[in-house]
Amino acid sequence: MPSLVCAFDRKDDAFEVRRRVYVEEQGFANEFEPIDDTAIHVTLYVDGVLCGCARVFPGPDGESGFVFGRLAVLPEFRHQGLAGVLLDTTEDKVRELGGTRIDLHAQCHVVPFYEAHGYQAYGDVGLDEGVEHIWMAKEL
Image 1 (spheres, rainbow, N blue to C red):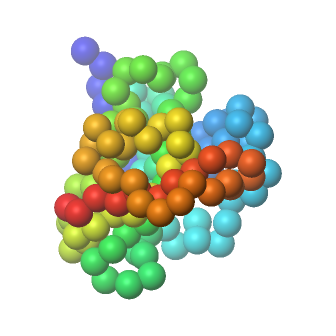
Image 2: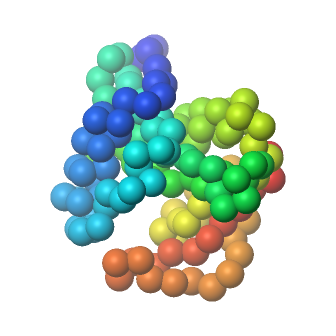
């Protein structure tokens, strides 16, 4: 059985995964932004090898709501449940920080994944760099 380890604030590792997945694979041009300087970056390692990342930061209410995003798993590690590990770990961190709600802006093709984890879509579908996204939320 492989060893799974999540770490927080290894921003360089998170940026490496995001660069490979969002910039190289998916073609996003505006992947990195100022919120990255203060966000909590979650990275996941399988047997010591970097395989995925996510980030979370306090939302506009500044207290109980958080914004989750940039969930990415490298291609060679997909379809093993690792995205769920990253999401669950991040939710636990938000609870630890006193958060009671998480919002996220999901690519529409992964909505079923988030729905399976208790998130509900709200609002209208919109484009982010030409890719359809929708807001989703979960009360913790």
